Image 1 (cartoon, rainbow, N blue to C red):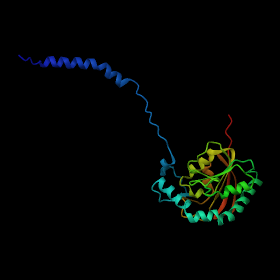
Image 2: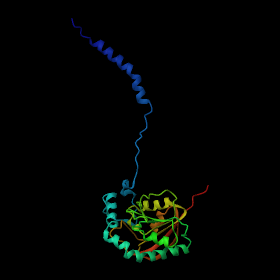
Image 3: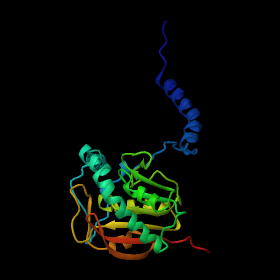
Image 4: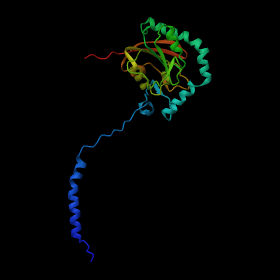
Length: 256
């Protein structure tokens, strides 16, 4: 005859099972949890509009749905075959002597020497680099989204591919192309050596071309962005549509 377990018997089995499992449940709930080993790498692609710098005298142009959209627009100019031909022929012969004159004047002010390790930001085909080398600054290199060996290496000025404290001197005439001016300046200060010099050519009296990402109306935003540097001079220049030269020197580290 088949014997059916009674309900009290089944209940006793359940309670015994529950009692025996309590220590394991307690151990699981109150023991330290293993750390999460997921590593998130932040790149310039992760930058958001919240990190853009906007003020009365520095405004960011609208119209970029993503960082990739912005980069592609810059590449459209840099890779334009007609422009690249002009940069390497007519502009090459016309601009290098003028850049050489700018750098010679900076040497006269002791802001640049023949032993300086120099970087030209947004150099495209390296006209500025060639001008530096003709001034005797042999250890010079350019950086742009598209490399142009041997004068220009590939790099994004929002995220320079160089170590901290690499350069004695950095020059750029493409500040207006920075979608994130704060990041642009932070990377300059990061890669400059202490007491290193940065010189920017910017447009204050006129608006830059259609590929520009920001508009600058005074020097004050630059002074505020260069948090770890001191302003050396501001002077007028005739820099191919850019009218103002602004020079900064990176502060040496504090001594306690």
